Structure formats: C-alpha cells, structure tokens
Length: 234
Image (cartoon, rainbow, N blue to C red; front, side, top):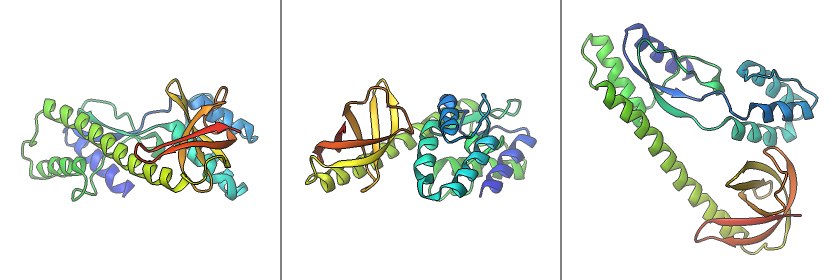
C-alpha cells in the first residue's frame, strides 16, 4: 500500500500535474522524544530524523516488548496528526515523517476515502493525457476540506469511545490506576490508564507532567453523557 501510494504521487509529479499529498510534518516536540530516548539509555539526533527514530523503536520493541506499547503511544502522540496538502508540480514535497518517505498520497481506497477518489481522477487524467478535472483553487480547498472532515470524524469516534468508557468506569470512582501521560498543553493534561485502556483528563496534580511520563492516578468523576473521565494524581 505504501509503495502504491508513493508511486501514484511520484507519477503525477513526473507528469507535471498537481497532487493531493498526505503529509505528516516533522514533529514540533522532537526534543521530548529525544528526552524519552535518553531516559532509556538511547541517543537520538538533535534534529528530527525518521530513520533514527525507527531504529530506536525497533530496538526498544526487542528489548522490552511488554512496555513497548506505552512508548510507541507516547511517540505517536508527540509526532502529531497527518493532513492533506496540495503539491504543485514545481513544489518540493513536504513528505510523511512517520513513514520516512518524501512522495506520498492516498490513492488505494477510493471506495471509502474521498482524497483517494480525487487522486484516482487525477491519475486517470494523467494516463489519458486529458485536462485534470479540478482547478488549482478547487484542489486547495478540497485539501483543507478533507483534513477538516477527517478531524470531525475522529472527534465523533473519540466522543463515542469516551462515553462508553465513562459508563464502564462509573462504578469505580475512587480507584487508583497505572497510566501514561498522552497529552500535556495549556488546554490540559491527559492520561491513558492501562486497565481498562481508556483516556481521561488529569484535573489535580498535573503540574510538571509531560507526554510519556508514567503516573498513578485516582478516578474522581465520570460523565457518560458528555464523555468526561476525570482523574487526580495519586
């Protein structure tokens, strides 16, 4: 699949046509990933390096498979989310950091994902030597629209999962759980507990916590209607 998407992107560029790229930019919080690696006795370069990161994760999976899920979750959270971006024929591809590739699009699932359908239409025009079915402003707008719709769908999925998890935990108020910090910003601090594997917000004792930290937290409130799961640091 990765190879097919890479070939599709490279083919459109070779034909001098624009393409809708799937982009995952270099992580802004790379230094936190470096710090996590250092805490495990590993060294990562000062600048984002996807190949070095892959090597680090591969070694850690072999060395400590039981805790690798926690480490990989922290890294995924720190890398961030992907987006769609229009690349003009003369532009430099921003690349996909997570896959360590420069040329990448979504093209293999036009039956369930609209960006793939757009790419298939562009490929069809390229093969036939026909004009592309979109203007550049339309493609720019579609790239933004697809990113926004993907985010909206993800929010709905998260809301359903959070409501179900809040209902599941409603009888366990006051219990203490082992967890890992999955988000830390001005908006708040989030923790994912291990058993059951659900995520909630740390409302008390979150000072100094950062993504990847292991903590013990106490469940203090649930609200399944709104999908709220609140913890305090134990």
